[in-house]
Length: 326
Image (cartoon, rainbow, N blue to C red; front, side, top):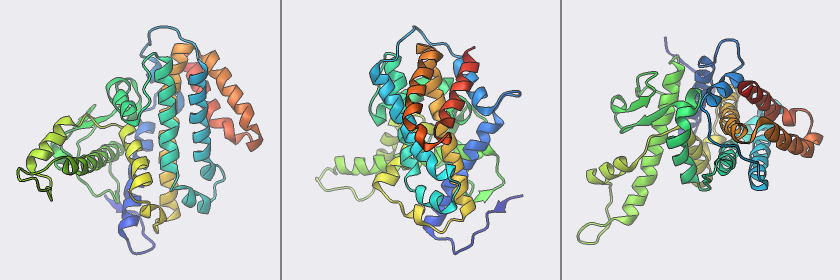
């Protein structure tokens, strides 16, 4: 049976947008939990799955790699403040900046890992493309899923691995399978990417008489879809960050309930934590867990005045990675 989350105020467009994203993020976190291996924590299970694919060659952690890791850890720390203090008001205020912090934490971990791996990528587009082509297949849980096809037609979209049917259900509903929310989030991301590509297409192209197109012609949509690679959770994080920075933040000032804001935080912090784990595990495979632990310990000393909570997330991931590589 489908259950609608209770709404304490009239449902505005901004509130609906926020709830939809919160439900996707909650589904992402729940799907990950469902994919965990028996006998291991979620972090341990994810690290084991990533470490199952070997890497070639031993490398050292250069100062540039460590610098990017420190940025990633520092950015994650900033993202965790609202949740660590467990204050509904602070969590609501922090919701506007959380998508930016979450993405940049994972983005800088990606920059660090590709640098130590010998094929550095530094731009947003390059990190997203590298993830889709190289990282997704060796990832765990929702990070492993990719979506292709025209999001206008859910039944024609292809989810790989095919853990569920892609459908166009109302994202304000609960009661669907966790995988369906992940697929819906990837489909929503694909729509966002097409919207951006549409705007660029209309800027670049003219009719034969030199006048501007008012609407995207069918041929233009075909061109956009043919050049659009598979969509991943990395794309979802990036698009959330891009829309927050450059389009609208109205949904973050919405009348969403404290429970909905909490669900948003939990899901996005999971995506941050697991995205960092993905890249940190591969860094440890290249340079060794000892080198990674030493870099983390040095960073931890710089933030210890904030309290034990400040370094807990990094320490938990290091323990999970060490166990996976043992």
